[in-house]
Length: 60
Image 1 (cartoon, rainbow, N blue to C red):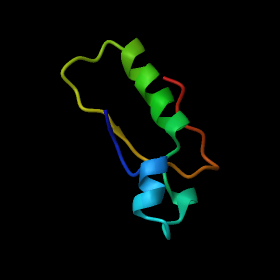
Image 2 (cartoon, rainbow, N blue to C red; image 1 turned 90 degrees about the vertical axis):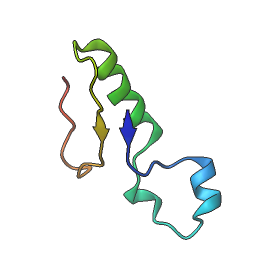
Image 3 (cartoon, helix red, strand yellow; image 1 turned 30 degrees about the vertical axis):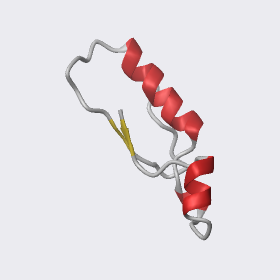
Image 4 (tube, helix red, strand yellow; image 1 turned 180 degrees about the horizontal axis):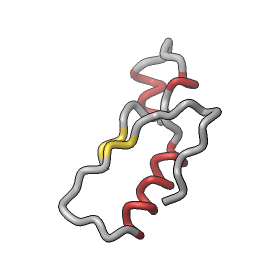
């Protein structure tokens, strides 16, 4: 898993002026992780990137 910038408490402390609505949520990273674990992929790096919030992420 290689998520881009993610909204965590540590990141908020390190970058207090950053726009948090432009970051991945921890739930988005968790959902991507579950999708990867349920897949047949091996030896892959999954980049988790922020999508337009109006566009739903694919379910598979």
